[in-house]
Length: 93
Image 1: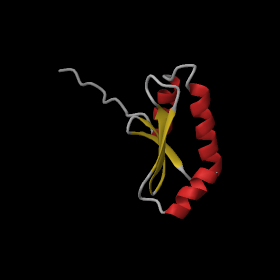
Image 2 (image 1 turned 120 degrees about the vertical axis):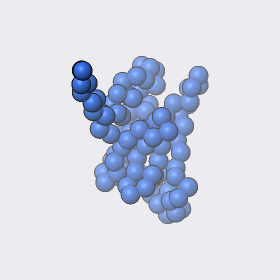
Image 3 (image 1 turned 45 degrees about the horizontal axis):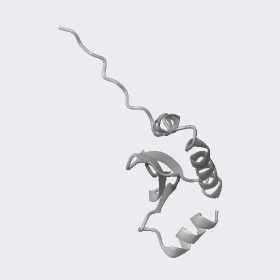
Image 4 (image 1 turned 180 degrees about the horizontal axis):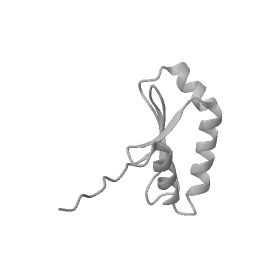
């Protein structure tokens, strides 16, 4: 009987790094810029892959973004559970 080792699931940072590595060269610079803005505006936020895109959260989901397939645009979604003051702070950076 052969015992197979259980594969470990990559941590959140590894999942994001892997997701970003699969982007096209055209999309990557814009998405890296968005990530940098969010990280600077909210250093307390944690990033993970959710809804098949990078998502930042602190206790709950805050913002998710990613490329819109077959278009030169970025989908940027702010969680509806945030109040307006928090949404403005995130957008203003």
